[in-house]
Amino acid sequence: MSTSLLLSAGRIATKWPRKFSGGKSINERFSSYFLRSKHTTAAPLTVLSEDEELFRDSVAKFARIKVQPKVQEMEKNGKMDDELVKEMFADGIMSIEIPAKFGGSEASFFDVCLAVEELSKVDPSVGVLCDLQNTVINNSLMRFGSMQLKEKYLPQLGKRTIGSFCLTEADSGSDAFSLKTEAKKSPDGSYYTLNGQKMWISNAEYAGLFLVFATVDSSQGYKGITCFFVDRKSEGIEIGKAEDKLGIRASSTCPVYLNNVRVDAENIIGDVGKGYKIAMSTLNEGRIGIASQMLGLAQGVYDQTMPYLFDRHQFGSPVGDFQAAMQLEEKMPATRL
Image (cartoon, rainbow, N blue to C red; front, side, top):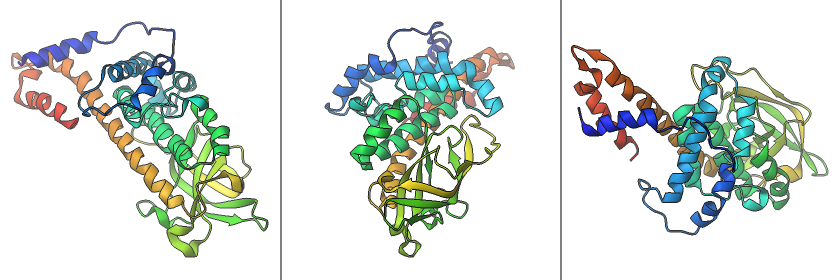
């Protein structure tokens, strides 16, 4: 049995503290680091700076102390715990890249990936909530929204409101830009009326704000697609029944129905007809976040499996001494590359 494997198994049992240290939130403890990290030369992705390690470890502690005790119940009920969500907002986990002037941590995209990975080691449902909020919802508004929209919605998204990304439809999955949801402009141009149905929308059940993609002119193809910021309180918006999934059940996946939903023209993200650009650039970052989620999930399974391999004995030896288990030990670090 390799020495590294023994040390790994021993660390797993002792690395997490029994009590969550109170006091300052993750946001407060690392705000100065976040500001510095935007102006320093990037290190190799396989090497973290001391500040990045501190941030990663703080999120890991949050995940183990705050998230882990609630995982089984959330998965069984297919619902995110409300108090846990409040704690994620309070600790700055939902506003990692939002500028400080809007109440965020003003960190980097890499910090988001670290947070998503650590949360997903314990629960990928919580990991994907963090990922979508930071990489898709917040980023879309920060990069393409008007200053008026940023001032109105970024403080909400950073402190209390979950957002949801509404692109996919029943007949437009991989071919997302064949969507049928329509946005009809009012005679005076002051508002648009949205009609259509979105399918398999993550976090829809919990969201208070929706990024909805609709076409203002279907004859223009993808050039007619426009992105609208829609408040859940808007008349005519309805959230359907959540899908009964095999896993990641606490992350709700629901249809969203839009029936004559009136949206002010000032709630357009970016320019009319540029929704395709927003969707593609945003999803590119979101996919990296999902990769972080999957990496964290794999590492979490690995960390829980290794002690068992040396607790269980077969044919007079720990299972971890068998060749297949030793190959697992060798292959897992390579997945990070």
